[in-house]
Image 1 (tube, rainbow, N blue to C red):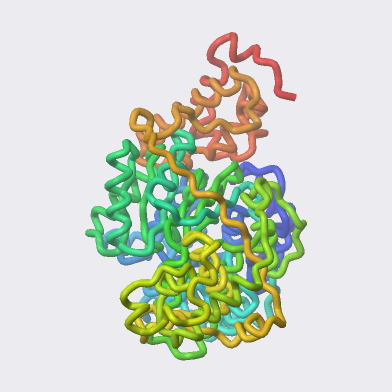
Image 2 (image 1 turned 30 degrees about the vertical axis):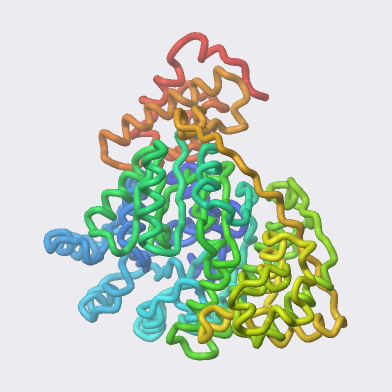
Length: 618
């Protein structure tokens, strides 16, 4: 009976014909009162796992969400579906707060979104103790773990839910958590008696590409110009200053690029975020302060101009692309300077030694991912404990296999140069030494007289930079912050120096020199067209549906995807409903959306004999 109720809710409210993956198991488990840890990739439908039980179980489902923007989007999307929900956070006016409290006491809410800080306040807890509760859902649950990539201290205090509300089921959800992070979530939130539902981490619609920094802005520009003219994306930078510089340069090139970081005035941040959500073709250039609160399904690309902190952070950030399941791209540029910078940030932090060791280990895993010659998707999935196919055919290393070369001699020369010069000089100094380019400093320290002087002259400066970068990435060389970035040997370098262990280098691609710069067309003048729409009439109809959606969204002041996702519009083109009954067969059209928008979209579908007479794609 409960399965039927859940399925009826899925179809009638959300407009989907059936559950995906473990959704039905999780939903039934929570409906029956069980606790759960749920790990699913972004876009796999985690929200349904607590939204449907909240609507079916007696009482209100309380959802702990870390950002106000995320709450706002989720509440608006649910209201469009006819679901009774509200948010309680610092952005609420006193009047709004009183209205929400009245709705809670009247029992008219299915879901209440609340910030962790608000939930921890004693008045909030006392209020919740007076009303029937369906469940607690802790979204972005990786914030609980101090070993996770986005630790938030207030999340650790959510352990009080088990004590204060022992009979209310708790469900923790996240897209990213390795085994230690999973264990800590379970421990912190007292979910030991609950079940773990670990979905696959694969995002097959995302294409991964990593390039070496060789004129970063021009590389970024080249990548962005390949994207469709109406596609939105995120460009991540490590510093606030860099976000503003890159945004300004992109604006000069004709892009709609907006900076976003914690140092900007809150009104500017809100305005930029709203434009990103509600307009097409907007690029946000941001620090990691931007992203967790974004529920936008049609982000077509995520670009990193600096190295993230870990595989988890990279996976979480790239996962903001293609949440709708349509093709998306993840692009990252990095170099030796990124490695030094990230290691310095870890070592100079005030974290305890154990945490620093974990952060170094996570960074090493990310560096291994960047330098791999294997399928990138395979490396990511293995990191999260899955057994993937050897090749995905949707990443740069699969589409353009990387050449390798055995470089024991070169590795030994690089390590020996570090050792013989006292482990206190940087890569540039050592490369000049190996190539026989004596400088006054080499003469000053007597290093031009060393036996290794000039022994690597057959390799170019660029090749030696690659050698040092890969040895650093492999953890055989470390940066000594006390000596201003001087390189020193790690314990793992000894077998290579002794010739007991070989080292295989990847062959870096040749640097491309291009003096031509396109200024007339900032992005190729082509709109994003789903591959499933094969004929020109189908694509024209799809664009007409998009125009109608945009007009309706502007009237209401909401993002277009709140009306319908792109996938729903695609399904309309393929199904071609001619009446309301047939419209309910379209994925993403439920009873509420049908009443709100069915007539308007049916009119677009019916307009013109040419469109009505289109042959099916099948």
